[in-house]
Image (cartoon, rainbow, N blue to C red; front, side, top):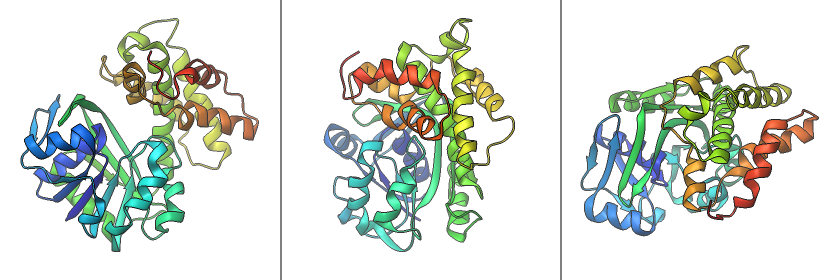
Length: 307
């Protein structure tokens, strides 16, 4: 199976390396020092699941040189969705599946007018990983899950083929027939944990053990659930409880990628996380006091102001 990984950061690098080790023909699209290091020394993934060293690594900054592929793992930052979507047109064949793995809830929707409904699927990546240095991805903990499915619901032959490869690669994978529910469940957890770990610049273990801070988690989760249900998303009755359980079970040193970006002085995805919750809450008339506070205190750092 031919796979192109667009954006070889923590998500794309880790999943792409695992799929390549399982025998897939994987090409990474990256840029700058990270691309140069992969070309020279290969891609290394280290952390709780052990070490994977992909040498040589197929990597380029020119998607048009790859040709049509079976699957595109679309892992760019949220502000690059439209521009990167235009650049990957040469990768699209008759049955290519583009699986967006962004944070937030609208990446697939934004790609539809660019690539077409027959191409775009929905996807969720659950992993805590980041670029430790050029050519090196460091994962926190062992959790590594990929969920994907057709936006219209149901299961497809291309999804089943990709599922078999994911299982061969050794990480948890699900071919979902209700991918929008999965996307919103991740959004609920990610928007909450990203906002709180970024605002405090503190790992989740310390936050959940603090009796003054922990109540922010269920309150923020509940805000997202209320909005999702108001938009017609079929979220489970115990959605908030599932979010709390995930928070309690996360590695103590875990910090969301937005928190890492903030600490490094990089641009952050705030408008598509707590900012999206706030915007939808205003549109629907649903109060979002916790996410409104998180959005307000993080907004001065939106464009990369150093913490």
